[in-house]
Image (cartoon, rainbow, N blue to C red; front, side, top):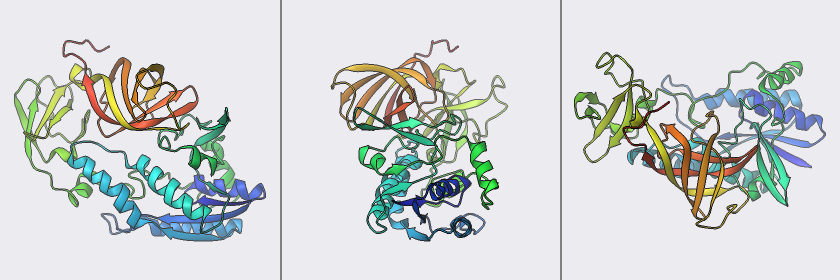
Length: 369
């Protein structure tokens, strides 16, 4: 059985390839290059990552190739990323990248051009089967679980996907890499934007979009300063406002953005009710199973995450139609942000995710515990 391993140059995909090789599969390593441009220091991190892929594959004695999806990434992921920021929203390109590139173009390449039976990745998730349907299940290592980022996958993708390290914790993965002499054993985990990496984000964004300066206004109406452009700020943001030391001395937070007047509204203190919402509307829902658990117009209870690493929150979901949802929160939620993803769970099983379109704030006289 032939398996293509999507290799990033990191320890997780390195160990995924190692484990499959040890299990006797015909393993082929493939490195994706989806971003051509250099960072602020003139460095293209993809070059160093590919060199690590080469070293690992040579150590494992498996063939390796590289494939370039930079055009597809710019056309279908990065363009959406910029459009969302122009609308005043805060997108999550990692989720769209998994849907559009890793488990569409790359999966098709693996199954077609390479003739593989499966595509394996170093994601911390597990796959299950129930009632003839594939399930996307949380990883054994809850601190590394990545079901949030793979919530856009469906039955076709899961049928052809393997996640070799989903049953391991990160410490064990690094230990396996070290014991087998892999150069990536102690390599730092990648962070930042999918395939773009860590950046000075305002500077990076300013290379593609023009921010228009405007007023920073306290929710009560008093001007507190000036912002550099609404595109550089997100709901709940604390750092980079430049208005510290005013008022009560508590930190200031972004509470709202008004695109028509180009105004950034702020409040003081992380318990201010203007930072909290009680429900949301979402669209573009992807059900991992292929369909909603209830009919349109009906509701069900489950848990949800509104951002990665957030503990599960109790919610009541109303299915408006196949791809639109209304989600009521059991308790007020801080900084739920349009453009981000709401991801639903039934215990250890990820039901899928949708893009947050609108939030309903709690009344301003609400006492936040």
